[in-house]
Length: 438
Image (cartoon, rainbow, N blue to C red; front, side, top):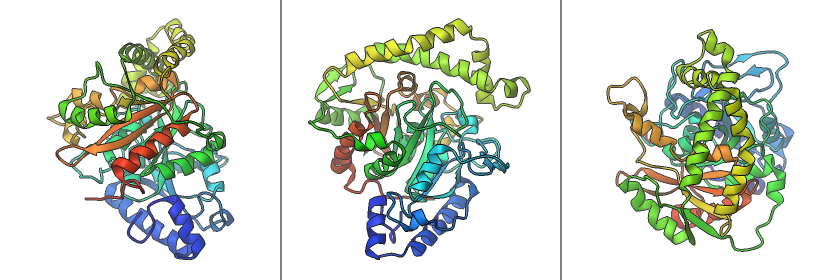
């Protein structure tokens, strides 16, 4: 978090248990940092003042840890803002199951974090609220739609944050801010109380600065994953042939793939087929989810553009895409995981872009750079596979370069094992340090 608090949840728990720092002191420090940086980075839509509960005082796995989450989750008596506004009170609303589970495990919830409107954009650019600033530099774009989550984690405002990922919305912001982002297997973490965009593709994900914290949060939300043991050395494979990584990215990614990947694969046909079907499903379901707002002219331009295509899509096409999903996923598993447990795949195509290159409305906007942000993301949502974005080096400007690790459904524990090795070798034992250059 900062120089006066440990960088991982486990280390914080140990410090609290030893009495090196008091719980009240720790909580006050986390609130203070969250408020100060939230205002500077434009990343908080609502601040919550919490008194410690018995869970925070006890030996729960997340006791005393400061978290905050994308403003897409319902909270007790509060409707989320969804990137449109700051949220508002409403009696009868219950806390989303995932957030409630984290709080029962001792976690603090310091606030709601900015997001692209209705979770439907590849950047954090917003129309109704201030756009969050990248702590690596205000000239740098922040990926979307879980933009505030990535900013808050990277700057050390919180240890971890929940976001959602429909076509890369956890992995893209993690990539641009140089942190880790885990898109979980579709359906692993409850989506109860989470506003949908495309329900067949939406997944709750976790952003953090290190593998240890990803594991702590995931272990609370998915206890079956926590109990799984890796009983043998994991086999790895990588995909580079046919990918379109720009030279500065390839120069960093290729040596890592070759060193840590045991087998080379060509997944081009799988990726192309799944991408086409993912786009069809996402457009159709976005249209259905937001039909009323679209027809009334209330939806943002991203939802309107995508949803209008979806509303014009014949339902049999959509039904075919869904019915083919299980077989296409099995075909991919049979092919890609025949000789591997974890895949090393491209994520970042080009260097982290500047805001004026990918934020619409600027004279220097470049659509190809915007498209590059999610080039290798959405197809994995269609297949429902878990994927973990992790920085593995830096470019000549000192900016992070990330890849994604992919495993079979419900094998997130395999991702964490390989990510832990990469973190140890390429980042450092305690992961990424908080940074705020703004």
